[in-house]
Length: 396
Ligand SMILES: *Cc1c(COP(=O)(O)O)cnc(C)c1O
Image 1 (cartoon, rainbow, N blue to C red):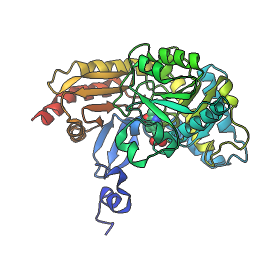
Image 2: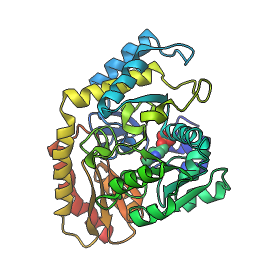
Image 3: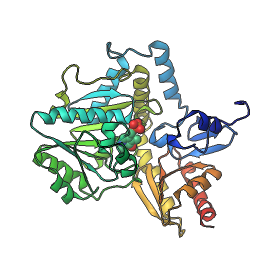
């Protein structure tokens, strides 16, 4: 039976229906290209949702992971390993601020750590509630889900044990109203990824920082999607010159290996006592070695500059396509959304796939592009050249 079924058919039978059935099975990749099980080749413009920062099968990642798995693959947190120490030191160095790191295996776990840290830090001072943004996304486990401002994925799993108050994203006055001396923490994305790569108005993060400073609430920036070079800086908040109290990372950090990190900056970094938190896989040396290889490669190959240049080229290329279905393009670096004038993003994604490009219908009217940071100008140009034809097929 399985011999004649495709992988997607077998997936449909063996897996829970929470993802639906994805349109393709990918069997291998090299650089920015991937191949499906029928042997078709695609230019990967989504990178596993902003994860495969170095593309596929990058020699630096292959070497680091192979070497580490052959050296020691797991120690647990009963013992220290060298890759986790190097990675934590490296992250603190990139932030340029005094702090401490907790390593996990996913984004949602990084946010769970941030939540527990904020609860612990705030409880002594009687701080009892959290503020997060409407349409924000922070993960699927119950703590992170309770911060997620999307009713469709949140409400049916409530009520939640945390008091979370939602404010419209980008509205500094609403944030100011919502945050008092009883607020433990404000959780924000520097731009909302799952909402469709939606940046806030200029000055919003600075205002959030000031509101938190004035009230003593912690500013937690969820950079799980936006960090590690995605916007042309190591961290998206560096564009605004603000420093969060807590920073969460995952996706692009491991270049495809599962890793998450929660960084406490300043005094909150010392809030946990021994025994307060943990993770068996957190600090896994293979994942940490992968992350170090990602950071080293971004630095060695000057990828931050590259992201700025190639990202701007992609942004302008899309903006230059005059088509009635295309309303514009938003985002920064290699983290963009083509905004549509009609809710046809799913059809655009399908047409792009037929034309050999993997993109993501992140919202009914927005197509997300988050390619590997190593994408070339020629590859970007091949997409913008194909885009009019893709849109023509959908408009028909
Ligand atoms: C993807 C994402 C998460 C959740 O990460 P997982 O690894 O899927 O748990 C949290 N916050 C943001 C901003 C994300 O983009």
